[in-house]
Image (cartoon, rainbow, N blue to C red; front, side, top):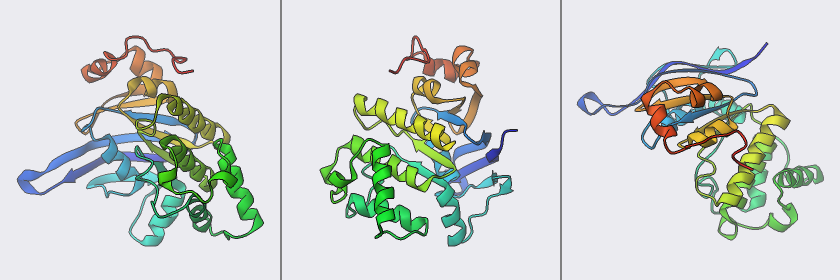
Length: 263
């Protein structure tokens, strides 16, 4: 039997007050099983990143209910948030924005150990950091003293995946994780994320404007327009038999889609 890790019921996010209200997310309901990969697809301004931030708890929903592991999610205290963020992590579009510019690679990885309540200056800690780097095809001994400005975007994004490897969250929110890196690195990052899913049975929520990418990585796809989920279903259902006009518009830019279109 599949285990539901996250469930949203009629979630709304409204910015502003009175006449200046902006409904960024409108009555969104979705359900995600453990180990599943879903994509939330839409153009800029569709509300998908706002929804991602609501799921992460970086923004508070205006109303509606979010259940995590079968229980109503409460993020009222710092302790609540810390425990939730241990289980629900994110990789963002700009890897440099995700990395404290004053932290070395070693400090970044040490922060993961601290979040897990583990010491950072032992031989065991060093071995864990080495393993995390090796998982993403990086060499800890070559990078541990380097800072963000000394790394490429692809290296930075791989380090963020190494961080996820160490923390082993139940859910990973990947918000346009390949849009700011070169084509070669893009394929590598996607392969690594799919490997994480396989090796760790990790649930992944992809946020993307690229419906072709969504088809490649996803079990299920949710199409979002102006804050509303206008279509949902399995990847095959949504791509091969689209019902919403907005979905059809997104597909216009992808004449032929096959599961093996990325090598």
